[in-house]
Image (cartoon, rainbow, N blue to C red):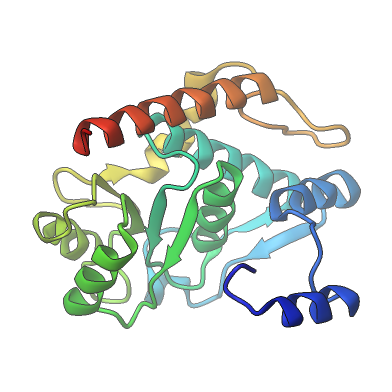
Length: 226
């Protein structure tokens, strides 16, 4: 809201359009309240958009997927205020990705699926994108290979991860990493009223965030010495 005039901020707050509710807190409320009610459903034409079966996620399943991907992002060095690019079609994965990035305090930089090399390169440089989440293919286009090929032209981009199969070398396989996350990160913390729960409890997540923040600051100091 810092980009808006103070008068507009006051007006929107007075009318109830804006408040201090956090997206992640709202998600957790829905998990506790709505239980096994479906939260997300893939489009029936998913096969034309990207690899993978059509899925339906309940609120607890969505929360668990978000936590698993959040842990993957933390493990790969993404932390608060880092910028993560996303280029995905309107499937379950794009919602999971948005919420996982928000959960760890990073910044989402969404790219429309129509964007190609020129837009992806220029806007990633402007936003200083440090990680990029996409799919092995978007329609018939090999999105993961295309974005990975742009890394030499985007100085800030550290890694690319993708959903789907047949990924090029150097691209992180997000499906496999998300699947492995519970065993890798230990016991689940759990939410009251949810059968699945979180991949890691609040203390582990807080520890990982502090560790990533410390490493991020050290990297910035090394890159820009006094």
